[in-house]
Image (cartoon, rainbow, N blue to C red):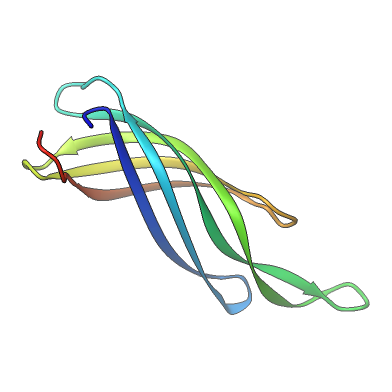
Length: 120
């Protein structure tokens, strides 16, 4: 609709102990009133994220990592600027929180292109 949009994301990250981590999320974007040509929005969603959990030796130090999956939530917002009738440039800032024994938090700023499926 003119005020709501669905955002999906698939990401890959090299990280913890050689684990090549995938993550996926779905978010709902709520568009606020236009500011000139730009449209600010707020976003929130859920997803799944792989991470590496440390494996400890009997005397304490970590000896490796084990792949795990965690539920994640995200919240943030951004600005959408039209490039033409079907493409928009988006700048987005989000906070991500993963839940579980080794849950983590991260903040991300990203730019991307949105494809408008419906009419304007």
